[in-house]
Length: 124
Image 1 (cartoon, helix red, strand yellow):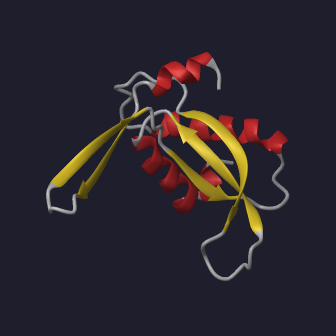
Image 2: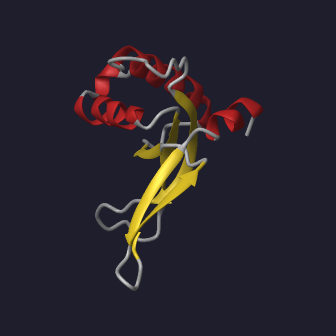
């Protein structure tokens, strides 16, 4: 991971809520946990496509943000291909390619979801 990404990670905060065995509510603040999500990829998607995909998604996200109060210039920090088991349907133990998309701010997850699932052609 490069230095610029490391400095950005210091600002992330994930709040995890739970209950102890005694019934007390707890909130744990986990620092350095950046927002990310996975999307299924076609088998034809290659590592050389990651840069183009990242650039297209970044452009679409920055254009779709209602306000950019954080002043970010790069909404998508990284796109990597990972192989995971698909949880939908039966696929035996075959791992399929997914894009792990690392984002700059948590609210970009919703914008990404809307673009990906509601208007797939908008990104490309």
